[in-house]
Length: 165
Length: 319
Image (cartoon, rainbow over all chains, first blue to last red; front, side, top):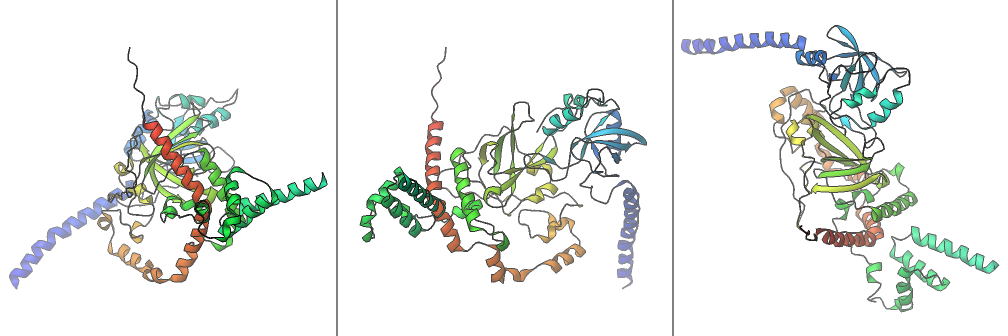
């Protein structure tokens, strides 16, 4: 009997310590991990994924702190494909263009598994030099329409795309 | 002059009648007889009109394929979009018939092959935004839904480590070509769980060659079991009784199991009324396919002929 108790003690003790440490680890992870699913609509505070090779974007994604949309530059408040958004990324405010959405799309337009973003500066030229995922072809038309003679030139984003779908 | 106009009006009415009511064998006979008596003779109906006086004896050899088309029983799987939506509020027999005619018209223009959920397909569509004005997307068909001209399917693929899906409407006039690269089925009715599976299960080569399946062979069922990523998932897969998922037990806890049990409806398979409401009865299916069978069959034959033509490759002249 005593032996059994002893054995039980020896078996339970390390397990208890392991679970305690695991709980501590999960607590620490929970501060980093997002437990809610990604928002399917691009609204304020929606998390996005930077898909260009800009230094800032790469570092933010590697750290696991993806940029958050803090403003959508249209009148609906919901960002659709080709819309310009303001994002908070690593403590800075940057502008970006949505180049792929998780939302359901019209027939023949691709729907992506993540909400993709390309960072741009105020003139519309991208911060990176390459987009490493495919972007929808409809973006060519949308961005050309959005580029006005005197305003920002968004078509530079199209030039750094590696592939269209 | 006046009588001629009246006659033409009658013809138009009769031909319209003939065009719409083609599923019932009786109606076609009536229409054919009426047309023959009126004197209009389109080339296809001449035969029937010629044999119409002899219709007293039932077994006449020539009109039998027209009157009693033997519809293959697998048509409801090959052409599910020809069956109307079983929802009662949406039924409209005339609209359904007109849609079927339009679908046949489209099928005369473009080859829409047999495919199933789980088949790997390539769709070439004209795209005003693309550089070459066309775009081609290869992927696995993960869902097939809607009826009639609205029939559509979803293709999924992972390109450059980015998963993406495209919805195509089957009867979209901008679609130029639909190829089935690998004809096969999967264990489930839809494969939305590929969104939560590891990316290699939905990665398909874009330059894949079409795989040849022997004629008359049954469509193979691919019983591959996909491996899911850990939670969070897009849907509660543990509640859907999926057969094509390998490791779902690994991620569900007791609370998930219990809640999944709670929402199960094991009595539904005995609910005959529910089944009746959610399906098209067999008699109605027969009517629908009797209407379109001859046309579809001739299109199939034509496709086979074209295939044979295409497989012959002229030897190239060297030097």
